[in-house]
Length: 564
Image (cartoon, rainbow, N blue to C red; front, side, top):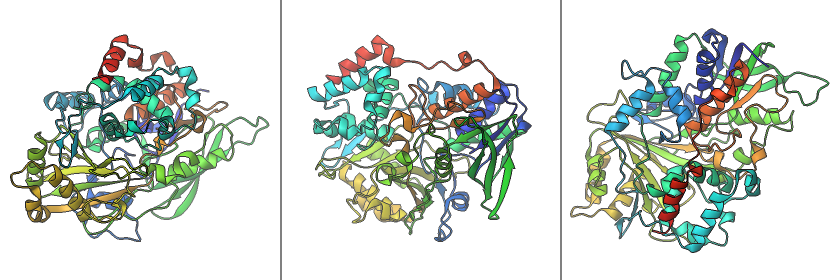
């Protein structure tokens, strides 16, 4: 059913992409598109800490230090796979580089700062691990091949099968360099969905031949907010789109009809979080509703240098609304699969800002590479998993500097994360989730000291490094890996559910054939599909998705690499 107005619930990249396609392909007026949102970035964030504190801090735990910068997560791009994202960025101007599109800006920067990671894995007593040696045995190869070769129409065989269960007879898999690199490149955990792992194997199959150096990774000039989201915001504002902030949509009103399956939104119940007042917004028959039904940064909370990030137990703004919708209709998925199991989905990350480059120079010396080229992961030297295996303690990303446009020339900003936040620190005797920013930095220095080739160990410079700190901000994200949670295909709604007359689901918690989640690619494509549907644009105009898993040459190279 064609529409000519839109209400967007959420202002992340999926709904902003939908708005761009409505304007450019559907020829809609921007003034007919209204966003209701709590923030203007979704998971692609990055800001001065003072700005972030106002948005995310639990008001019952005031933040002592609001200096420095914070990015709750980091995004690595890949031109070969992220075709819809690059199409979107080619449609809007950069806000930092005059006269070019956001895509041209990114391609220009990336061409001059190619990724080549010399220290993808590091371990105490061994230093830099030779990641070219994937470490696979014949059982590993057989199970990986079976997963990759499973036909699309048989994917339901992996419904509710976790990665741990799929490899239950092959514990060796989780002791391979391949697994360490794959889990930390894409943020998979052993509890994650084997179905989703299969999709990554299909879309990223070419990474088998280059994963140890991350040469397929492309990066934006600055953080993702300034290089991706701000260009979108400025473009949509210029087109007349309306942004109603501090808006938490708490409930849908649905049309009562004799057709029990019909899904028609007639109104929204909205809480103004600034005033604590509630209002009702009617949805007219000419209006489509675009709903981002989950966010990996919902309910995130911040700490600072001397304060750990508190746990926010909120189920999540977007997922709570999704759950309310599922109480009315049977075919809208199951949000509990993603938002009721924090043990499978939680992360802790940190953003460190220093007033000089001492730590940056030490990391450059230890890893033998310049900033902007790496995702460094530190392997434990003793068993730390429930099955008595070694695993990755922590990972860091050292950005090309500056990472923020307002960053001073002498300042350094880097980012790191703990994929299993309930594990115990090796140098600070606490669970990662309970550490302050200072303690996370101490843990990082300890990990670096294990692999430091000398002759002067970084530990001897710890006091000077601590003196250089402007802030180190821990972030607790209860749902950071929620989109990987073990599930069935039916647990996520389709972009346009059956019998929906005006409601579309967008983002990374929707079911799209072949698409892999945790990427701007899948989020943008969901918005593109929804926009085309309601604007009457032929689906044949969708950006063509490459199928590397159907390319014999790519498959042959991957197979060869498995045996090296």
